Each structure stands twice: as C-alpha cells, then as structure tokens.
Image (cartoon, rainbow over all chains, first blue to last red; front, side):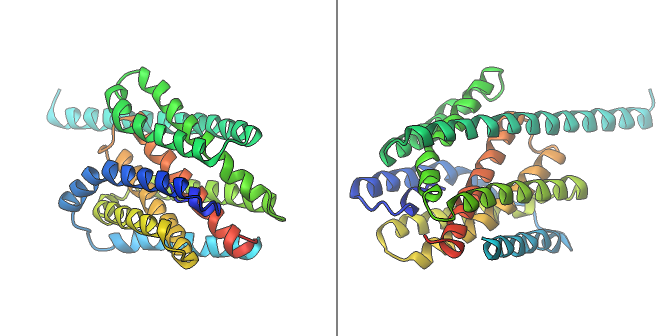
Amino acid sequence: MPGFFYRTGKTMDWVKIFSAILIVGWIIFLWPRAKHWMKNSPKAKEGDWMAAILPLAAVVGFVALLIMMV
Amino acid sequence: MNRLDFTATQSIESTLSTNKLIKNTYMLLSATLVWSALMALVSMAIAPSPMISLGTSLGALVVLWFVLPRYANSAAGLWVVFGVTGLLGFGLGPTLNYYVALSNGGQIVATAFGGTGIIFLALSGYALSTKRDFSFMGGFIFAGMIVVMLASLAGLFLDMPGLHLAISAAVILLMSGYILFETSQMVNGAQTNYIMATVSLYLAILNIFTSLLHLLGALGGED
C-alpha cells in the first residue's frame, strides 16, 4: 500500500524511514483482521475457488494487455 | 401471519436492506473517488515534498485507525470518510507528478486510471451477479496482505526492482480478490455498514491504481 512512495525513485533515508513507519503502521492496523479471518474463514465449498480464480485470471490477462498497450 | 408469510417478509426486508447498502456504498464511493481525484489534482499543482505526502498518508492511517471506528455508525462518519480519502488523494500528488513527467506519462496515468475502473466494475459486477459467498477467501487475502507488507518493508532497504514489481503484481491480485470478498460480504449480509464498506473498497481501488501505475511505468514506460 505505501509502496508508491519509494517507487518514485526517491532514496533519501528519511523518506525510507518514514515509509517504514507507515508500513509497520499498516501491518499493525491489518493484523487483528488478518488474525480473525485466518482463524474464522469458512471452508470453501466445491467450485468456490474456481469461481474466484477465473475472474482473477481475467484480471491478470487484462493487466498484461494494458502493459502491452502502453 | 403464518410462518410462510413471516419468512417471505423477512426475506423481502433483507433484500431491501442489502440493496440500500449496496446503493449507498456505491454512491459514497463515487463521491469519495471524485473528491480524492480533486485532492490529487490540487496536490499535483502544489507539488508538495514526498515527506508531506507521507505525512498525509500517515494522517489518513491514524484517522482510519482511531477516528473512523468511533463514527462509522453515525452521519459524522461521512465527514471522516471524506477526510481519509482526501488525505490519501492528496498523498498521491507526488507519485502522479513523477509519472506524468515521463515521456508517455499521460498515457500511463490514463491507462492505469481506466484499467482500475474496468477491474473494479467487472469484479464488483461479477460478485453482485453470482451472489456467491467469497468469505472463504478472507484468511488467504489478509495473510497475503501481511506478507506483501513485510515484503514492502524489506523492499525499502533492498535495491531489488524485481521485488517491487512482484509486490505490485501481488497487490493487484490481492486487492482484486478483496473486491470480490467485500462485495460478497455486502450481498450476503456480513457487512452492514456502508461507511466501512466504502472505505474498504476505496482502499482496494487506490492500491490497484498505484500498483498498476507502477507496473505500467516499469514495464510499459521508462521507470
């Protein structure tokens, strides 16, 4: 999520340190929800993963198409 | 009223409240995206330092963490949502300025913008029309997010362009899965708060946009 700050090529140390603080903040923010869902996710039924993988594969194909277009 | 009538009434009420939730979420999401884009334009015009941009993002995180949960069930929550999305939009300014300055920067930004819109509308439409429960993906998505965050942290101090590209690709996949997950949460009644749903979908869209921008800039442009 905060990755776009260092992707701009700015390599000053304080930017990196501040980015690291931001990333750690996001990890702490996400951790309770991650823990909850890792423990309490319902089991997938037959065909559920396929129903999720197909649109995600379409996204991969679409992104590849966009990269070729630019 | 017999049991059959009671069940039918409950079902109609549930469908109506789900439809209202979805309508409110998409209306608020549209408004916050427009607001966020305006703030990004202001930020591009001002061209603040990356530190200011980081500061606004940290401010948004603090508001998300401490303020939003308190006001999510009241009308004041709307102001908080606009505050968060405004700060995050403003934080995008330096990134957009960087890409716009590339030789084909305008095309990269426009493609990332349009591509994000198409991905969101297609996935959301798919989750709404299939009405399938994607909550089984919750553990996978959140564990993936934590792994991506840790990889981003490592990427800050390791000069590995390949790692940054892999992170961007993983973020697009995870956030796409998250759109399916969050939309199905709304459809199936697990998410009943349109303010929280809006913020979740907004963050997914923002992450897809910035990651797509990075991928297009690196693989299609001159990153």
